[in-house]
Image (tube, rainbow, N blue to C red; front, side):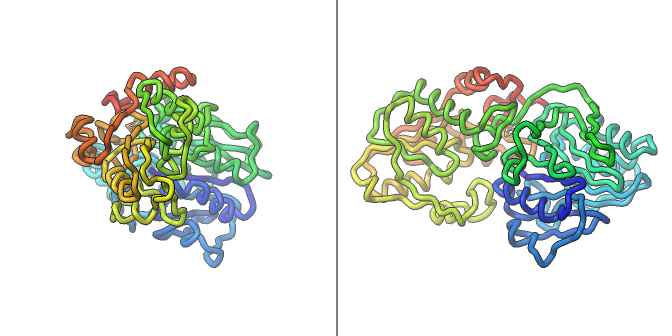
Amino acid sequence: MCGIAGVWNVDNAYNVIHDLLLSLQHRGQQAAGVVVNGFKTVKGEGLVENVLTDERFLDGNRGIGHVRYSTYGSLDEIQPITAYTLKGRISVAHNGNIVDADEKRKFIMESGGIFSTTLDTEIIIHYFSIAPYTSAKESLQWAMSRIKAAYSLTILHDSFLAAARDQFGIRPLFYSKYENGYIVASEDSALRSIGCKDEEIHEIEPGTIVFFTDTKEPEIVRFSKRQDRFCSFEFVYFARPDSNFYGINTHEVRKLLGRKLHEENKIQADFIVPVLDSGFSGALGYSQASGIPIEYGLIRNHYIGRSFIMPKNRQEIVRRKLSPLPSVLEGKEIILIDDSIVRGTTMKIIVDMVREAGAKKVYVGIHSPAVIGPCNYGIDTSRRSELIATKNDVEKLREYVGADKLFYLSVEGYKEVFEKCGVNGICMGCFNLDYPV
Ligand code: SF4
């Protein structure tokens, strides 16, 4: 998971990208990078605030940026990636993974091409470079039409800013008018956070590139037929609750998933404890549907990042991030609600913690189905062996996490919620192994 941003024709582009990336920080906390006019670059490990400092300010009115959660590669491979080509200099920020990256790398290397990183983002630059056109715009269209998935991109060229989504629209991307120019971001909430109005925000269509140049209006070019398979996990967990996809708010979808979970599993308890922050909306839905009140049984330390996207010391991070409240939990029967169980380690620690704090019975409800397949589209669940539900049935999982009861939302129930919301073209690959590509 990564967050990307772009700015065209806006003064102090560095500061604007900084602010956009700050709003996208939840999508990646390991590294950040910015490229502005003249391909001047600032990159580094760590949070946006630590990398894109005032001291490193770069003057310019256009640029792209990236926050990174490394699914592949080491931390010295921080985006954006910049290269010289015969069609001009180009810099790319990428959210997603190219599914056939190994074959494409091999093809390029057999033709004499070289790579300086292990990032599949470089493949995009190579395809741009070898495209049988002299025009940079046509070369980009050609490259996009030959790389199937998964990508959302911001691309800075000498003569334009471009924003592109693969034909399935697996990862999100939006743009908006801003001051005298345009800005691009992975989530619309980032655009609104710096003052963009809803009516000026556009969700970039799958299979298109939006070119921002010195002409007044952006130019939208279709390079492939639209076949929507948007990542449903963006709705469930990744995106901010104030973000919208297909015009539908993620918080509202999470509440509906929580309601559906109650419809399928009518559990009685003294109260519901949301696993903050990502389990809150679903817990609210379960509470509203069941009439069981919500309590503050776990307190969240907001100065520690999201445990799912921290690759090391996950257990320790969970204990530091969440603290149980014994005065609330003592002698009570509670339903813990969370959005998902991926590796199972986080939930096991949480159940231990609430029991240590005195909870009498602990029921665990998950407002998405069991994660049974890896994601090859840019989410760090690419190793099947890490997914606890691939090796264990629900009863074994319940034993492992130490709950008195464990219940998931069914695949059918999950799908139904999205259909009711009017989102039909979703990817559910990690839940039902039906992958778009
Ligand atoms: Fe999202 Fe899962 Fe599909 Fe990956 S496999 S894109 S995480 S729904």
